[in-house]
Image 1 (cartoon, rainbow, N blue to C red):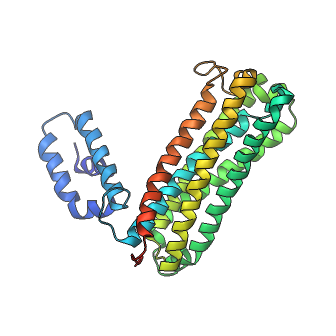
Image 2: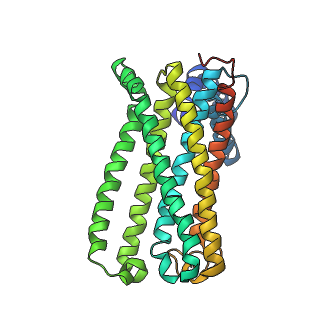
Image 3: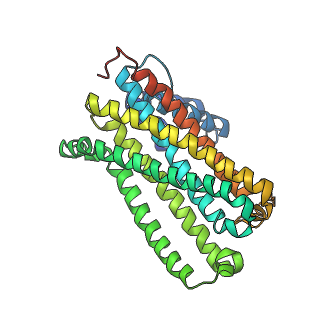
Length: 316
């Protein structure tokens, strides 16, 4: 096995760690497995796990004893990491619940409509909070670029930009196609359109994840004044509250439909893959799990932000 192959095995570790310990680690791997046919799968998985833990520790996501500024930055980034799963889940939910009122009894539409509207409003509010946070951090990003540190974030930002353009083009083509189709063809009646919908969804999914990765890379490297850092921490706490309420609205709508309009859930997009249910459809289950995952990130970040904002602890 070539030395380059050993170096690729430790790519899961952060760059700073590799610069300090990379040579020793690759030498240890070469001494341990040079006479073997290769590094065993168990050892490879161990490197992945330890590398990701080290990345989380370096970013301040795990561990204790951090300075207030580190707590605020790490907490805000964690909350930011929780928002993309909500975006993806919201898109899935919106497609699944398309025309939900048609199959819902009139007497039960009001509570379901209230929860559905709450999810929509909270989704817009969450996007607004993220956009305002980005605007607040924009001057610091400009200083990073002007200071000659663009190379540190160039790759993730470019990947996110290309993925966004591709997803936008696919979405535009899909919307133009859908405009010329009837309701039956748009809801599973036309196999090519269903396949195109899956491709567009995957492209959007990748674009959101890459955008989040780019935002995290930038957030970890920009220099933020204390006032801005504290403001971003407060905005992240607001976003955590929005996520909590959004999940509650989603679950409320789901529970109402399961109790009074199960046919809406039974006929929703994605039911039948891999199972069929009028109570726990796989599409809503996947969306709910994504929201729970995002909320777990947000709550973990909120704890760190609360530590950093405690009175008497300057964020410098």
